[in-house]
Image 1 (spheres, helix red, strand yellow):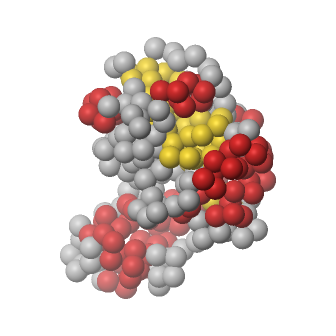
Image 2 (spheres, helix red, strand yellow; image 1 turned 90 degrees about the horizontal axis):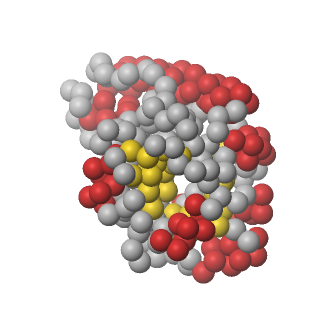
Image 3 (cartoon, rainbow, N blue to C red; image 1 turned 30 degrees about the vertical axis):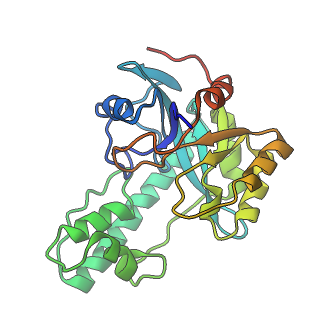
Length: 263
């Protein structure tokens, strides 16, 4: 399938490597015409409209919001975001908590390893920033090892963070976004439980670069049952776009729900 729209991309506003200035070039190299910027729990501060164009590339303002369900935490993707006061308030709280959490984890790692870590405690900070700082420090510990030994969910330096309940997260996104989708259903321990959210959403992330075989027909059945859109993207944290995403026909159906692009 020829991918024309990569609808799951992270930038330096959270834990990605792309900036808005490097995004158009990465899109061209990846052969895509459309990119959705979906930073973690944050709207990119450089995007001022739900849909814009940059050097001929359509850029959709999006977000990836983590929410808490009764059984697990899952991620929602919002597209074509028009920022509301309620969403702004929630995101400000989440970012304040993210900074607090990053400080506490950094302090724990520094005490445990007897090193100083260069972590910028600012909006968008997360565990990948701490892991990179560990790998770049005097500690004999690489990036993935930092998660495995120190800051993974069961690690000695892990600190939990506040996550909104699913009901509130869905309500906030539906009020602000043209399309709300369930992200990467097969990444959760309980895929079926995650898919139960689909009835309250607009879409499911149908195309995603899993590192294993998955039964995508399960997603097709959910999409058909609830008359949902299919979304898809690479979940890029580097500069490789177009690894997964939507074909021209699938994107046309998705784009019909978006406001017109502003140049």
